Length: 295
Image (cartoon, rainbow, N blue to C red; front, side, top):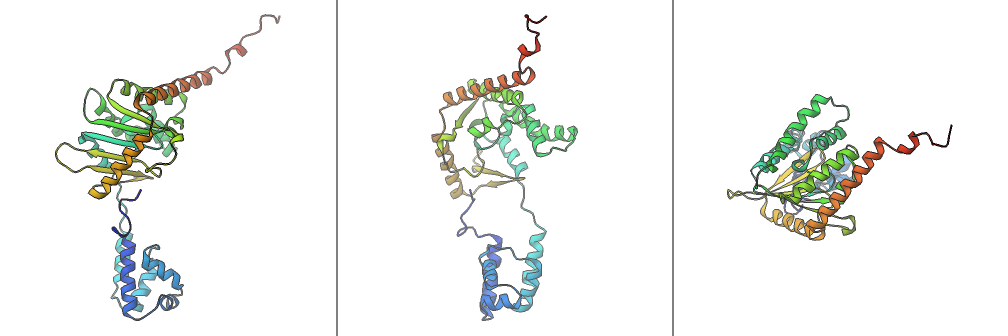
């Protein structure tokens, strides 16, 4: 899910490309002529101008010389190299603490505020398999602190849609999964959270390519959307985009199982993991006993 379509929110590279097109045409050069001068193809220059390819510093230097742009392309490329896409996960966690309503679609694993300690540790170990236990504990602490917001409080209202993949993906082993799912079911039975399961049979849906979290506030602040991706996250507050995300969540919830049916499924999966855990610790007790008819 993209925060804004390209035509209404062009990327930085598309803006640089527009400048390249302007200076090229000002010089009366074709894309092919510019490409030939730089030992590149005209098609590649076209991709630079459309923003589909990133301009490298060595190309920027040659373009500045060819188009007499006074070092513009070199400066902008150097500045971009010093920038990293911000990870707004910390800001999102802070916003979550003050939200009055949280609506979340989780496609791959249980959201942080619904996690047990063992599940959180297993998630962290999966991403950092070589990390020391002290590191895992330090990373685990803020997640568990956020989870406390559901203990003995009526706010925030939490409405979570778990993809069936969350239930099927065994993180930390069967015992950890059994505990984690039973905890979610307990919160649901106490009416502390609203939880639904989006079954595989529901097919495609608007957020099929990523997680989505919506946070509403009571102080008049605008709603925020948080998009989680690999090793990063993005907060979105654009009103038009938020309307799209809110509609997407509504469609996902409409395709999911009802809360009662979802709780039944979650508890059933917890029982199944419990059984797997017992079998793991005692695969076949009868084989451990000597048959009575053998001397």
